[in-house]
Image (cartoon, rainbow, N blue to C red; front, top):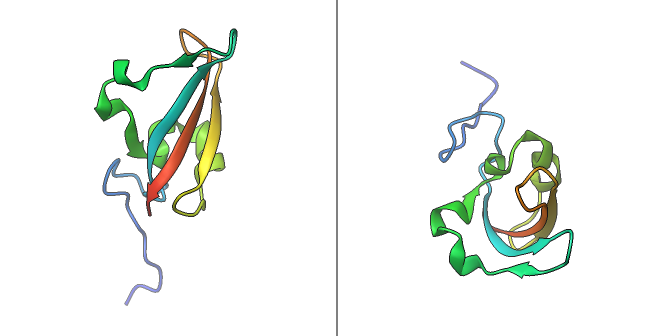
Length: 90
């Protein structure tokens, strides 16, 4: 009988992901502080599991409670931005 249970994320299929589902709340450009309209971003890009934001950002998302909002900085985007995401599901 195995003594350890390995959880695999149902969204990305990786055992390293906690499976939390996050949605985009706000995107603000770093250079000028202008808020990007979310209506121009396809909905399927606005909701995803923790690892959809990458391994580097995952440490900020891991173990957050449902309803928590976290700011993530993306300096490597075409228009460097700060993305605010909210955890909507464990």
